[in-house]
Image 1: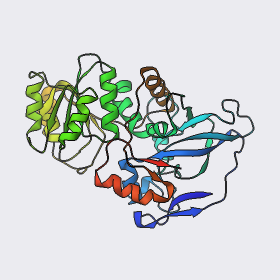
Image 2: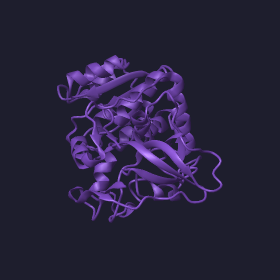
Image 3: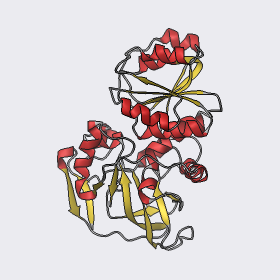
Image 4: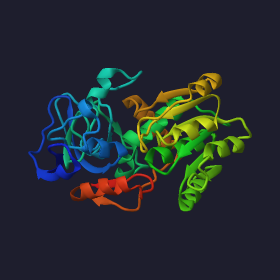
Length: 337
């Protein structure tokens, strides 16, 4: 069967290879992968950007996939052949708060991922893909959607009337926009593209700002809130955007640190943070239980992931990762397997 393998680490060393077909052992499930989706994190992994926190040889990349169960091992009662399933980003994180051991088995990082035609999973490392979502839509959820859900719903507990800041039209941002609208929040969105801003408006954003035309967009958003400030910001940019995000915040606001697209180091105005009681917190893809709640909510509310118009096959994975790096995509970039 075919698998994408990076060996040694480096995007230029990504090749499609034939590897032996796996067999489901006791407590395991064999899944025919139907689709996978890309995250910015996958481009960092391909370059060895996570250092000791990832494999550097013979790595099968990508964390997010969906497929169909084709065999179950001894003792498996939860799943049967034909079931449609979604992979969990952290297989060992079943529920509760994040612990160090949970991050040691992340798919496509420390453990082999889903860029493969067939893969064996533990029976507790999957959630059900509802009939309301396609394989491509299901494959879009384990990292980006789960991270946005974890930040805004599980930990953020946003409520109607809260003011949420969204940055750009990447996967996490658009899921955050959808979840914020679902929760009844007032959404403020930034982008450098008039077309993308119009799209976010159509998706429910109440206020949009072009950050390329308005370098002081943090102050602009502060005015748009009536000087109340943002309640909860989804920080995707990192180094180059955090200052403006902080200028947009209201007292006791929360900044969920998710992306480092513009860099991972910047200066902080500690006085502003302390005086306004701003909370900065990291947010990752959550537990299996959290992903299950997310999938249920999307099914009940009829929420569909935004899938980029350009699709790729497994043979085109390197091209797909380069396309993701270009920033020309809108929503999730999907690999059809």
